[in-house]
Each structure stands twice: as structure tokens, then as C-alpha cells.
Length: 186
Length: 213
Figure 1 (tube, each protein chain N blue to C red):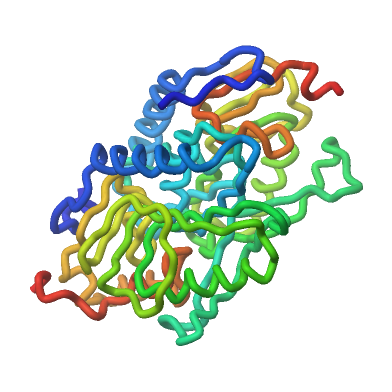
Figure 2: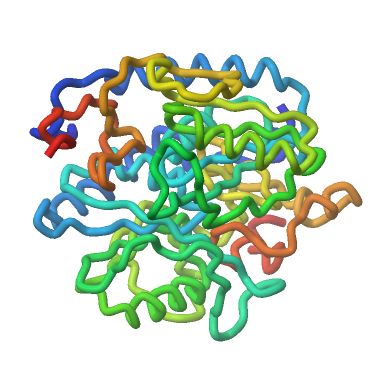
């Protein structure tokens, strides 16, 4: 039962096995860095919708106990990507004060969204604050934001799958593919 | 590792889970097509891991959405009413909907969600759950796709928690009764009043089956 590659996908950038191998490595690093931590002190915060698959695979590979929480964001209709203004649709249910917080994101692009989250949680008095991103596109970066754990550095192509979408499509592919330019240029 | 020390036994192994999810995905792949373009609604937090593995096995085009709910105070009310913390981003009017749950227990929460969705006039609504505990059912609810039917035991792992612990275990385990029967002071502090996106009554420490004694 293998999922077919849609016509809109130009090529597979990262196949399933490659992603899984790398997520394991990232998880091992995080487990080592947070060794000995108590469940109630360590909070992973996933950003919906994009990061939920990365969160699911990362979380179950961690050998250290932790809580899992999600937040949902939306952009303002009249805002461009460049301003980075986002609306918090759903906040975390867990109080982050005094906890070690790890923000889990699917992709780091311009950096505006992650910077917003970093500031949001930083202002709430966490014991520590780190970020884990599956993908980073350094060519697209416009603002500096600290990344502590990263899966893959990728070129500036439109990627879909493994949680990443194009207009809510292709999010559920088990691999990461590059979208054909004709799909997003029209 | 302390997380594993609290597990009495493994109920469904990681491999077992994947076999069960393959079967659920196979059933859904036989029913839905690209033209249906159904929307899968994940009930947070409990179902996120199931959804992550299910969605990657589906061969038809589909959309994902998320809903996070919380009970009012402790336990379930007879109406099953829950507070919607995060509503659907999509309008489901005229759409085929599949509710994705980690566990169906008494059925009250699911029944409430089904009635709530029905008022939005979807084309169809079906339910896919990883775990089904029919022995606990208090209200009849349709379960269209079910991974595993399980006995009335306190299960954790693969998205299911007890007091926000054990969600990340890659298997379904049975929690040792002493973990939830005695609550030392520090554990009580860690217990949130409202529960995660599980079937709201799942985490209650009562009643326990005689087989746990």
C-alpha cells in the first residue's frame, strides 16, 4: 500500500526512510541533552497544522519523558508574509512558566513565525526555550532566530508532504517532495 | 526509564499498532476516492499520533483539520457537552467528514461531536478510532473504522495519556494501578483539571475492571 506520487510533485526531495533516519538522530540528540528531566518539566509545543507529523515521529522516539501541547496560528488576511504578523488561534493548555520548552516546527523559512513564537514563549518565563525544526531554508531567512535542532537544510524550492501543504493539499504525503513550479505560479 | 516502570504490560506492540492501522487505512482506501476529497478531523490531543500514521497510508486525496476539546470540570456530563477550544478551520457543509479519535469509551463525547457536526450539514460523517472499548459504552455511537477492540483497562501510550504523561510511548500499554490509585502530592499538582483531547472520561481512575486487582 504505497502512496502514489502526485502529478504536481516534480521530484522527491527527502524519501520516507531518509526522514525517519534523521528524525531518530534528532531525537537521540534531544534525549541526551535533556537526560534526567521530569515529565512535568519538559514541554514540547507543536505548531498546527504543519508540525503534527514531525511531532508524532519525534515524540515517540524521545527516551526522556515530556508533555505534548499544540498551538494554532493563522495569518491576518491583510498581512503579507514579510510582516510576520500572526494571530494566535489556540494557545497552549500547559503553563510554560518554569518549564523547559521546546518549540517543534516543520519548516523555518523567513523566520518571522518562529521569531514570534520565540518571543511569545520567552515572555512567559520558561526555565529554558529551544527550537526544533525539521527543515530550514537558509536562503529565505530574513530575521535571525535561534535554532537548536534541525533535520535538514534545503534549497529554496516549494516543498510539500510530511505535514507541509500547498493550499491544504499534499500535507499527508509520507515523503517530502518539491512541487512543480506551474502548480504555485499560476 | 521511569516511564516504562509504570507500565504493567504491553497491550498492543508497536508492530501490532502498525498492522492495525494498515487495516484501517485499507478499509478507508477501499471506500473513499480522490473525488470524495474527505476531510479528516483529528480530535486533539489524543489522536495526533494515530492521525500521523493513518494519513500517510491513505491513497486518496484528503484534507486534515483539528479540533481540541475540553470537558467542563471533572468527568463527563450526561449531555456529553464539551468546550471547544479549537474549532475546525474548514467549513464542512457539503463535505465528507471522518472523525479521527484515539479511543471510544462511554461514547458521550463522540456523540456530542457528531451532533455538533450534524448541525453543520456535512455530506456524510464517519468515525475512525484506533481503540474501541465497547464494554464501557453508555450511549450508542457509530464506529465505522476501528483499529482494536480492547477490554476495560487503563491504557496509555501512542497519544493517550494519564495526567499528561506517557503520550509518547510508541505502543499501547496498561498502566499499573498503583500509579493512578495513589496520588502523591507532587503528582496531584501535575494533574490538570481539564483533560486532553481524549474521550473525556477516559482518564478517570474509576471504575477499574476486576482483572486489574
